[in-house]
Amino acid sequence: MSLHHQRKRSGRSSIRDSWANAVTWLQGDLSPNSWKEALNGVSAIISCVGGFGSHSYMYKINGRANINAIRSASEQGVKRFVYISAADFGLANYLLQGYYEGKRAAETELLTKFPYGGVILRPGFIYGTCSVGSMKLPLGLIGSPMEMVLQHAKPLKQLPLLGPLFTPPVNVSAVAKVAVRAASDPVFPPGIIYVYGILRYTQQRSK
Image 1 (cartoon, helix red, strand yellow):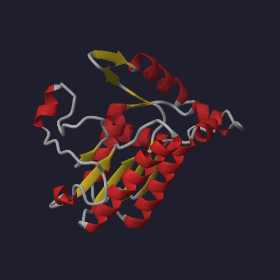
Image 2 (cartoon, helix red, strand yellow):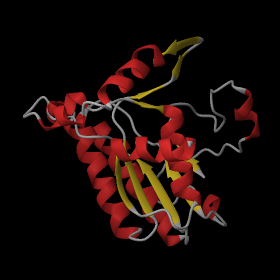
Image 3 (cartoon, one colour):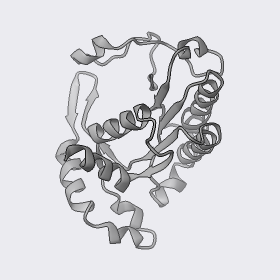
Image 4 (cartoon, helix red, strand yellow):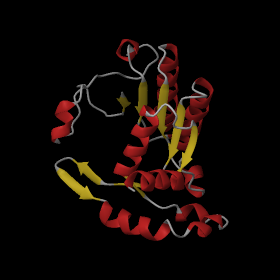
């Protein structure tokens, strides 16, 4: 099962790609008891729930909503839980306090409730084709060359203050592949996977 956040009343996703028709879409508000029945028989969850806005809104979506999902999954006997979090970006952590405070609170809850089956992915900028209404934005035109350069510039991340800005972007497909592997492979190690770990797992699978 995969969790994501969208501001619409229907449970059906706005995604029009053909693969979306093969997915069972369920609507829930991520309150503690709104969708526990949907977890019956579920062995693993991948949560992509997150968002931007005011400080309180960001903490609610990135933190409280995911904490509720983690607790519900634990109570229903789900074995594995993968959470798409975010890499630290130095100054951005301060500017987006609600976002990062929420993310880290959810991480703490996950490591507590799923000590053996909880996996946290901390990518930086995730690029791919982004749909905005009827428009498709090819973010890979920027993200792909940046990834090629910055993944070989790891020492620059040690620079004071500016270091986090050199975190390489990651292709959305790479994040998805590692998330699915973490959710489906019972021997995938629990804990936090940083951006270079995500890239390493992706390279292992491509060989």
